[in-house]
Amino acid sequence: MNEGSVTPGIRRGKKMKYTVTAALLLGALCLLAVAGTAIAGETIGVVRTASGAATVTRGEKTDPAVPGMKLLVGDTLGTGPDGSLGVILRDDSSLSIGPESRLVLRSFLFSPSEGKFDLVARITRGTMAYLSGLIGKLAPEKARFETPTATIGIRGTRFAVKVGEPSAR
Image (cartoon, rainbow, N blue to C red; front, side, top):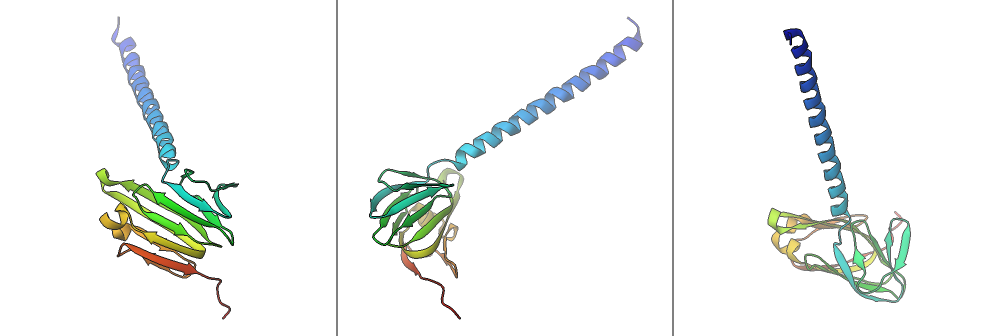
């Protein structure tokens, strides 16, 4: 075996090693992307009570809200003139939504072991009462509720809000 034939084999071996490494890294990135999607779709809470016209909209699909229904980030909770909803989130926060209301669960992260917390909900009309759970107690600055005209930061354990129609100025 002469020296000239060994060198190209070594180069090919290194090239193959880099190709395999790149393929493994790409595969790992794909697995992380799939895992991230599963986390994004995990249950963040549950409907405890529902009465009258009460719905949960997920994407383009609207279903009647029923006790036991699982809630996900991005769900829109809505009530009609005679509707109300009671919701318990994974951190034991409690939301009570009154008639003619619309609330979107925009963000929720509850990972006490990692010290990661986040709760963002947007109410665009109607009434809502909030009783804080662990996020409001452990990291109150991470819980906030948005309205069309203001953002409510949590510094206590409970509050109620009413969002009406915008006034003509």
